Image (cartoon, rainbow, N blue to C red; front, side, top):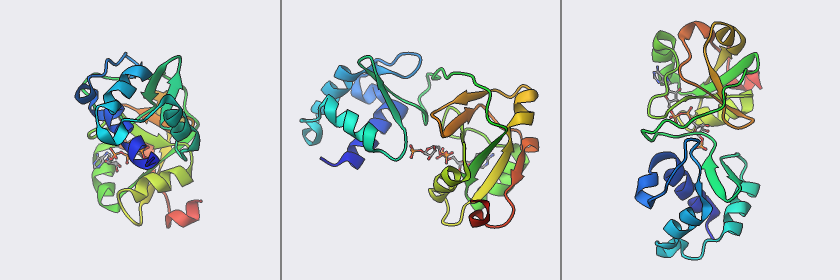
Length: 187
Ligand code: HQG
């Protein structure tokens, strides 16, 4: 089975288009595993997918994207659907990071970090994670350093995604500093 393709399909279903799969999603973004499997079985490619396959993908993935609990599955982050997914507010670490493309730097320093097509801004717990996120947009990403402590003290709300991904509604530019030098120096 193509685990990567299946993981992408599940990300698409749970983050962006549950209605295409006729999934009933609760306020935290969880759907019944049975319902997701039934929907996947409609397509020839996924007609043999089982709950064990989902468990394997979750266990083997380098990123913690999904939670499977009490017969339900949800994506931890990444949503773009109109129904806002309820996330748990939590005090962030003092510093968070955000990896992005060089071409986005000027607009971000002007308007702050905005969620763009997703429901929340995505921030990284460590530089390495931020580099990997940034590389999706630019071969030489820039790494932004977020003064999460000051932002939290000023009332900016942060939410827990997974242990490496933090979420926020917006991050105003005054809490953002460009990582000095190349990203290799920040490691
Ligand atoms: C940028 C992946 C211009 C922002 C990743 C980013 C992550 C602005 C892009 C998760 C801006 C949005 C999310 C502004 C923000 N002006 N550009 N004011 N504010 N941006 O893909 O954070 O592998 O929606 O810097 O690893 O890159 O799918 O967000 O570059 O965890 O599990 O707008 O998705 O996870 O891009 O990535 P995205 P992201 P998965």
